[in-house]
Image (cartoon, rainbow, N blue to C red; front, side):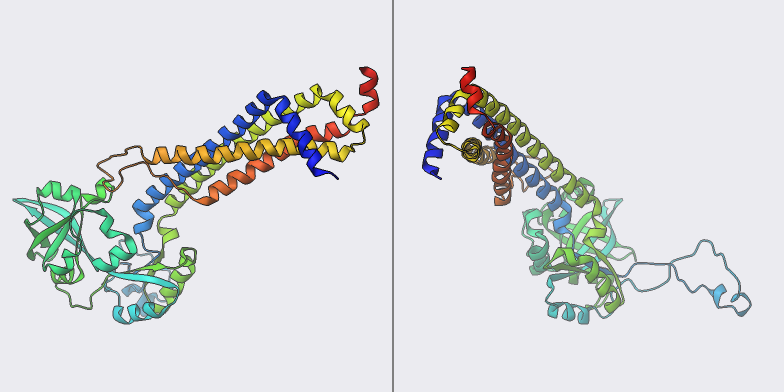
Length: 419
């Protein structure tokens, strides 16, 4: 079979009706452009929204949850052992909030090849003293280097330097909303009262803004040693161990394993933030659905154009078949026409999609809630370009297959007699 001749004939048919060919190619170009741009923009937004919560959430969190004591005194009484005891207003047990033997646990985590890193944490409920007013808040004792490495802590410190928590004793980084309430700036000294009525003076070395207003109104950060000092606890006192895994999908089974191994409570990221993952998957699905719909619509346009081309070129097709071209050869000619439209239209669509995405990526996006974001986020993943190319060729192939099949069955005798 002479493929050069088939390509030459297909090229002649394409150029003979170049306006219709251009319209079909523009349809494919527009579809691919919007598909790439929409997916890149939507997934960029997803990454931004997920970054506010998910990227700063440990894959596995080890802690001791305060629970009611299961062994109530009435159950231990001999006369009630064989009875069903209904107890109301059960109080929490006096179990310790700190993680028992935290040093050994962190050594075990360091040796676990599934763990990318971990960060100890202490949570302390305090009152920030503003004159005669006490503002309820939380001081998070953190290892600032581990937090910055694993949870991008530095990205949200909008004023000051996070490393000062380690270098400056009795220092604190305030949430933006909390700092506004206290009228506190870098270098100021604030008063903090703990739950045990102990008062401490802490120096402000930074301002933190997460993008979640309610969160920033109560949260603050200090070093682990400063938090231990606030609570009057020894250097081994740790209430949380935040773990980042190399494979986030393994978080649920590893959390169960750690809970049994370390005799503590464990929470995985899927359980803690299921609603955010659901929202991301829904938005991505909508983006794919809209993009694929655009490609299918473009495919119908190509189908109609090829149908009209076959109708107008019946005599040419009859002559081709009368001169020895088989039905398969005619079929290949029109499929080649469809794939050519899909290929060149798709190639132009990828280029325009990238340019449009780049233009969106440069549009200013300034909001007080997200100080680290200056432009609209766009994801340039090569996967989206590959999917767009594949769908472009598949859609145009099927758009050309049925008209090509019709052309291959044309009876040249009937056409010539009709002429």
